[in-house]
Image (cartoon, rainbow, N blue to C red; front, side, top):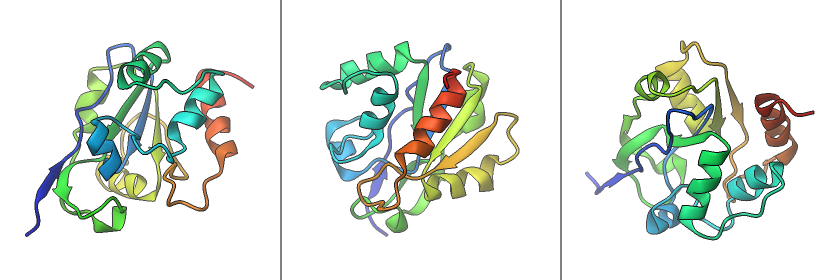
Length: 161
């Protein structure tokens, strides 16, 4: 049995409208202690770019951006055994209590960031009353990332054309 690694608490508040769910924080994210901490990950560039904003340099700046834009972040896995950052290495994991988060917020749409997040979500929460969509992972390891899919979904969620 390997060492247990722990993910982050959900980042949200009662005004959050969009929930973006990843799988589990990468090694670099765990080092900076916040979501999508690998500078090569496309998440911040894509989401901030959609709103015409620069990527905040600090964790506090990123938290401010998320609050202003009513975006919540969490991961499907709250703790697991993992070596490195690859989703395929996640073993013996605990699943996030997504339903509790939904009860305590105004989430009206969920984006599943990548196939592992989508797999775990649909196995455990596929019956939620909130619409959800799987999008290509923003991870730098994903060579099939399509930014337009993210931008199109964000346009639908935030009512832009």
